Length: 140
Image (cartoon, rainbow, N blue to C red; front, side, top):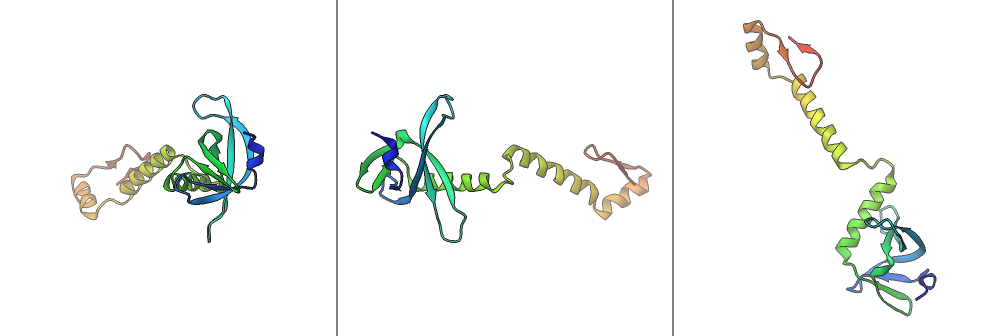
């Protein structure tokens, strides 16, 4: 089957839910094998949301009839891909692990800076300085 003939047709899931229009076909490296395989790019437009261009493997094509192309994917799985590609194309997409490290560091610093008054009073009575591992400064 010639994949170039699919350009301009309407893409649908295996349950016949419309997901978008096919705009282009490219050969990209596969995520696991790194061999170039054909991908079908689907242009998704939704009301009050940014447009997204989502690639799907051409191997997932079930059938082609008239102006429609059916893919072996569910609507909820495709929506997850759309959400991921919208975030990725936004420009400020953060890696999840880096984000978790950042929030953990912020939490430690916040706790170090905002010690309860009762704790501060106890430490002053003892005459000790409070030292935190996550901070490089001393709080007295």
